[in-house]
Amino acid sequence: MHVGAYDAAITILLVDDHTLLREALRESLEGEDDLSVVGEAGTGEAALALAERTKPDIVLMDIEMPGQDVVHRLRGIAAVSPASRVIILTMHDDPLLVRGLLERGIRGYLLKSISRVELVSAIRSVRAHDRRIILSVSRESLVQPVREPRTELSERELDVLDLVAQGLSNAQIADRLFIAEGTVKRHLSNVFGKLKAFSRIDAVNKAGAAGLLRARGSSEP
Image (cartoon, rainbow, N blue to C red; front, side):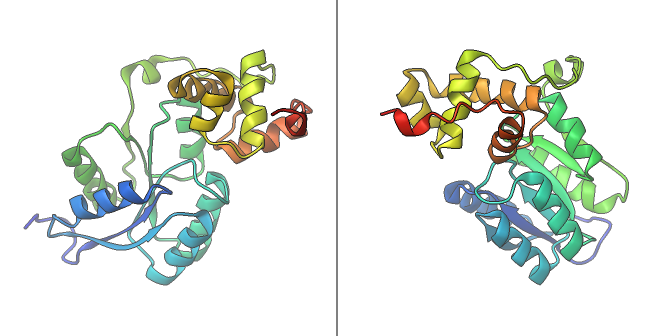
C-alpha cells in the first residue's frame, strides 16, 4: 500500500463525457490501495450534484463537456464542495487555457497523453500538499508566448465555429468541411486562444457577443 500524508483513501470524482475513458480511469485508479473513485459524471450538472453529495478530495475533470462550460463548473464545485481540489485532464495543450484556469483555482493541468504513473503521482501530490500545483504540458506550450486574445478569426475558423454553434461534433464538422478531424481540433484550439474561451460553449457565446457568428446554419445542407 502506498504510504501518503493521509491515512484514509483519497476520494476522486471523475468528470468526462466519454464513458469508456471514465471506465478506464476508474479501473486504473482503483488498482491503487489509497485511491477510491466515489462517482462519475458525464455532464456539468451531474458533476455538481455528485460533488455536493460526495465531497471528493479530488475532481478529475475534462474541459469540453455538454452543459455548463468549465468556468461555471469550477465555480459550482467551489460552492458545493470547497475542499475539493480540481485537476484538469484534457487534450488541449494551450498556455492561455492553462493560465486562465490556474487563475480560477485549479490545482493541476494534465494532458491525456500522460502515463498512469504520472496521473497517480499528480493526484497524490495535489492531495498531500495544500499549495502545490501540478502541470504536465508540452515543452512547446511552456515556452510559447501567451498573447492577448484577438477577435479576428480566419474564414476556416469561422466555418468551424458556425458548425460548433449548430451542435455538430468534431467528426461531423470534419465530414461537412471535408477536412481531417485533427484539423478541426487545431482550428478550435486557435479559436479558443483568440477568444480566450475555455470550452466550445464559451467560444460560441463569446463569438456571438462579438458579432462573429454568421448565423447561416439553417441555409446549409
